[in-house]
Structures are given as C-alpha cells and as structure tokens.
Image (cartoon, rainbow, N blue to C red; front, side, top):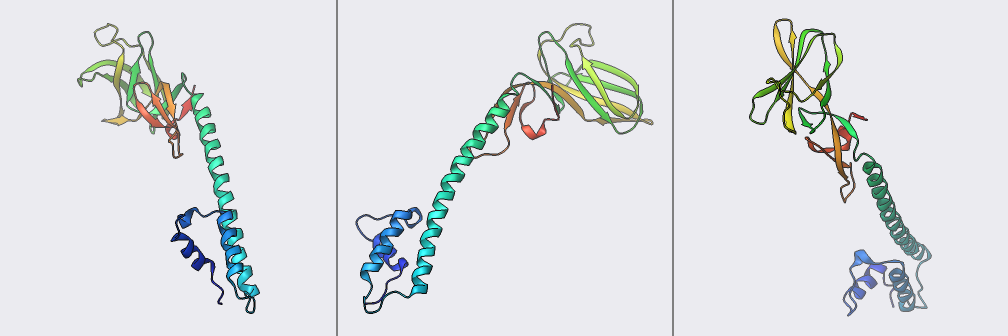
Amino acid sequence: MELRTLEELQLQTSTSKTKKDASSLDQNDFMKLMLQQLKSQDPLNPADNTEFISQMAQLTSVSGISEMNENLAGLTKSLYSAQLLDASSLIGKDVLLETEFAALPSGGSVQGQVNLATSTTALDIEIIAPSGEVIGKVPLGPQRAGTIPFEWNGVGLNGERMPPGTYQIRANYLNGNTLEAAATEVRSEVLSVSVPAGGGTPQVQVQGVGTVSMSQILEIS
C-alpha cells in the first residue's frame, strides 16, 4: 500500500458527506488527516522520515497561521477602539483647517489665519454669501510675510449682524500691482467623529466644513 499524501487525503475528505472548505481547515482537521495517513500506510513500507517531518511542518505552519490570524483580529479590534476613543476627545473642540468655508455661530465670530509667502501693502478678507455676493470684509492693511490672524465679528457691509450659517472666506493681497488670492485656514468646532470599520484614519465632522480626515487637522484648541 502506498503512502498517501496530505493533499490526497484532504481531497478525499472534501468529497465526503461532511465537506469542509480547505481554507477553513484548523489544527484538529490536520491532526485527523495525519492520523488517517498513518493508519493507511503500508507497515512494510512506512513513511519516509523526511517526508513525514515535512508534513508535520505543514501542520505546525497551519496551526501558527491560525493563531496569528486570531491575534491579529484581536489587535485590530483593540486599535479600532483606541482610535475611536482618541478621536472622540475632539468633539466640542475647535480645530484649524485649511478651508475656504466657515460657520458663523449665532453669538460669536469667525477666526482664522492666512499664510503669506511675501509682504504686501494690502491684505483683505472677504466674506461671501451662498448667493456669491460679498457681504462682509475684514481689511488687514499692510502685512509682512508669515502667518496673519484674522477675525470676522459677523457684521456685514450694511452694518448689521449676519444670520448664522456657512459663509465662504476669501483672502486677497497685493503683490506689487497684482491682486492675488491666498489660502485661508479657519477654526471650526468638531461635531462628531467616526472610524472606518475596516480601519484607517478617523473622519471628523466639522461645523460649516463637513467631513474631513483627521490628518487634515492643523491645530487643536
């Protein structure tokens, strides 16, 4: 009687009434296959030591992979919980983001900053309504290169307090005789956070801005 390999016995097992996907075989399944192989071999022509040791190594490898998968699954759950816990601490705090939108609260102001690569004789922050109309302006005058903070108190060009809501923020500065645009960074409140089920960077829901990746946050205050 010839020695049958694990693969042959595995094929025989898969066609039995208790079929099992080969990808789901665990340590007990391989042990049963190994014992069945020993019962099936010819006593006058036993398994070669080298081949038997090789098959035992397969058993050990399968067992190790199974345990490693279980450990990785547990580690993934732990990391997910830790990420969610860390991200949840941001709720209610203000974060600084590079964005052109800002939420004007009912009784507060909009704060942000502009990073100028060069000095200018005039820097202006314009507030734009959803209709596209410029309804507010914050003149900052001459500025040197660097980070320039700004604040809009919510008062429009007509001298009245604008209703709360989301507005577009646009920064313009004179570079010589040319009017150029500059990127704005705005402070907004974090409303909620979430972590993708499959893992990855936490997502942050920011008032007036929407959902952004946590990696986009420049500063927390």
